[in-house]
Image (cartoon, rainbow, N blue to C red):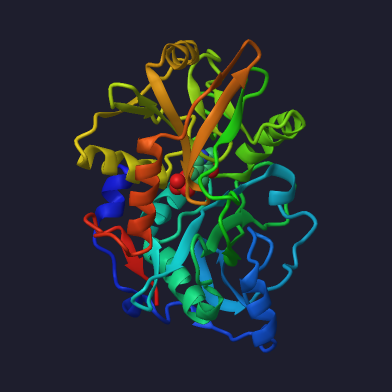
Length: 373
Ligand SMILES: *Cc1c(COP(=O)(O)O)cnc(C)c1O
């Protein structure tokens, strides 16, 4: 079963899931003033709510599901994650809709992807309903932390890691699952402003048979040096090529990429096993196909892409992911090329269509929105 198929199956309502995680209220929550100050300038990923969801994996099952005070973790210095990096994560957003509800977008896609990542990292899976219930419990406890206003949301970060104190090399038997929440403004400040992307031949984030299709910190660790080096030359993001041939476009360190052709068709790299199956990527493919646009998942050869941009056959490129939604790529450069693109109609209209659905302003034809509160 694909992630899209898994995510399309019916799921219990938030009211049905309420209470599955036990709320232990924070005795010292932020004051109204502190919270209002935080929400006035949310930024991204720097401020956190009063609570976090948490469960522990012991003796072969997840136990002790609770919503507790946000705060530092006590971790044994031998915890396996600190040595061997056994960790996975997810990212979703909760939005305030005009109907007064707080909604999120395709949470069961993330629940099933979380389990796909868990399998690759030899970690125990979490019942998708438990994953959903952890989001419901946390957002209901911290509903006052969901910001209002254009481009804002409460970013939800579920993750799990090996906490077992053990230096031997094997899959851990003790793990922790957490969800933390962070009020966030627009990811890239300045709205739909194009980013400059460097295509690296020097570094790879993932290789055949590796962890590229899993959402795990290790892939990010692998991408940081390239990003640091190119930031010095003014590039916003790095695009990675497939490690086997260094000729096929994979993705950015944390976003999938799309190419728009002058004939109106669209292409995105196929899920080759080395890239992450983005939920935003999947939703955009569906919206494009709903419009009757030919949207293919295929190998995109860098040399062809550059030639097509130069000849005008490729007219737009954009990156996509939960945090930034859709971001136009204005410049694509590498060792021996440097080309520019405009933010065109497809990029702009798909961004508008997707965010309108996510914010409850357009008809949710595919039943993607899920009411948390
Ligand atoms: C999370 C992530 C994406 C985007 O996935 P979404 O589900 O759209 O947020 C793309 N690439 C990588 C490597 C990621 O970790």
